[in-house]
Length: 542
Picture 1 (tube, helix red, strand yellow):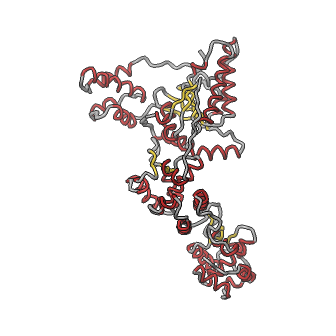
Picture 2: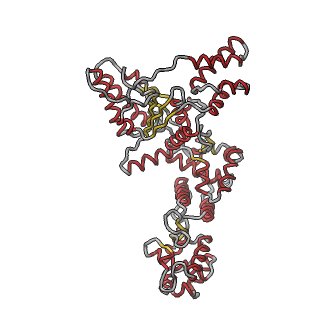
Picture 3: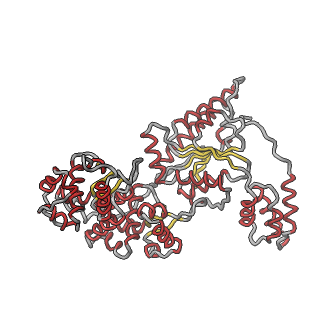
């Protein structure tokens, strides 16, 4: 676009407020009208808004008020209608993220591309190196961020994106990949590259489409393409869909390493440092296989943690917390009845977020020699710091069955009591400054020290599953179970762990007898249910 509009001459019009009421055509206004297909009224109002914007403050309709133009009067409402037309023509953007009367007094910004062209005389994307994949991706990232902040309309966003893609050097591998796919897939490829460069990993499909489109129908239509697997870029394995979360029906997408390397014409290197823990067990996320069923309230809490610890969100959360002088770690406690899936939920979060787990066995820390247990506990956190540097992504530190460590501190009577209290103090200090992702699980919280209660940001109680969830668990453990049998055994108020015990016994019985004895299931449930109930005991070192 090549315009010879002089903004100096144009802005002289804004010296006369009467022209807002009765516009008068000038040579510069005519150029503006021709260049951007505006009416005289639209061009005049735009000129006044541009003048206010150049003065260096944010503009609203109230800035145009004078003795004749008053909020709500006939002239004001006519100008407001003209304003809406300027929005449709992508000359201005209305800021919708504020607590003001958006209908009568919206906050107004001149479109960045229009402002650059008229005031600075620079074409859109004039500073971009279209022979550099990194430079192009940075430009797309800026455009996506503007759309996310609603600084450009959906129409303007796609128009600018199309211009940008057309300017890419056709010799670049990036162009040869993009040209095969429709516009939204091109955007997905760019977004996946951006997330990979930043180290965030995958991008949620629903969130991506919601940021781009205004219409829920457009979001739904694109999600339908994801669920049907009809996108060519996915079929061609340029983009890869990640499995749905156990708690969210929202797949995410990523760019495959093969095409990432093609775009940037280089090998995608991953961290390969060795890490050999001594007091923790390293559990790889890709080895974790679990199908979990939770009641709604628990599922929602675990879902929040799954999302908060995703690669993209965790990085942003940590950054913002540090900026606000808050502790940056996400520290959580899963507590409740035994066998309800507390540990399994941590493993499921690790699988979803592609994070390895450093699992701590409390018995490996305790030592009969004075001072040794304390040293080992400190070394656990040292190992975690080393793991963060060695592994591709920040791992999860899991204190499983941490009942003893988080109990109330006791009156010191001997060296063992002193050791117990010292270890708890060490854990409290480490959690206070913890920079990472920490989970602890416990069956009992009645005797938990208040200091630990304050340290845990999220506290999720795992109760025995409802009958509906028990049905799901039974059917997942014993395939093709008859409905009348399922109805009968679902009456037992079992935890998931108890159901698994019965299902394992059922499988062993089937192997020994070479047949499925569904009639024996009820008897197995009675046996499991009648087993001596575990007596409650206080948390503390033995």
